[in-house]
Length: 203
Image (cartoon, rainbow, N blue to C red; front, top):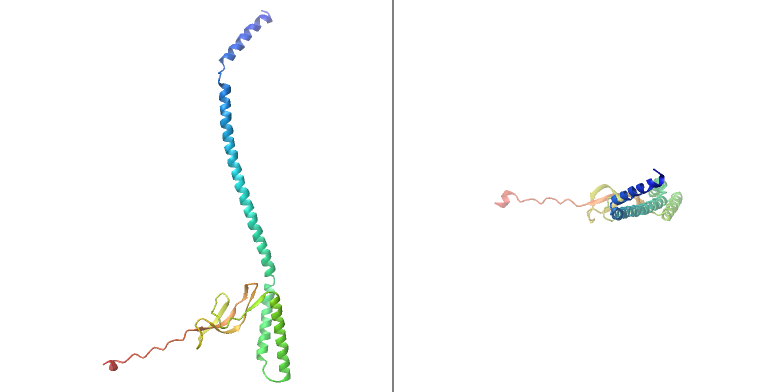
């Protein structure tokens, strides 16, 4: 056979194969593609929402970190003098005690008292400049956060649980306690038991 004679048979075979192919293949593939696209879109939307949530959380965490860092810096500036101020308090206490102990009318004692008084005022001026405040709570209600009770005593005319004497002033730096005030606190007077009448008096 020649090449020309074989050609029609192969063409018939090819046409037969084409007829066997299902007519709806292209339509089925198109429907699957739409479903896949819808599924892919849903997944993409879910992923986008997850990424949005992560971004919002990350931004919130950054804001919190920024606020914490800013507060830490402010605290570092405010309370940088804490250790130094605590070391100065005993020096001021000694000056106050020395002034209280200096009694007499001699010129030397007068000069000492004047010098000590001026030094104490300078201390107080420097403390005020750096926001160091004294706690002198005499006559005020006892506050366990700011005061340290050294003793309790019944004092006539004093309300129970009030400070009636300050042994040592307390101090605060920018609202934070440096040292509590050491105080004497009033307590209620003990009532004497009334004498109960005896059996003879009742009879």
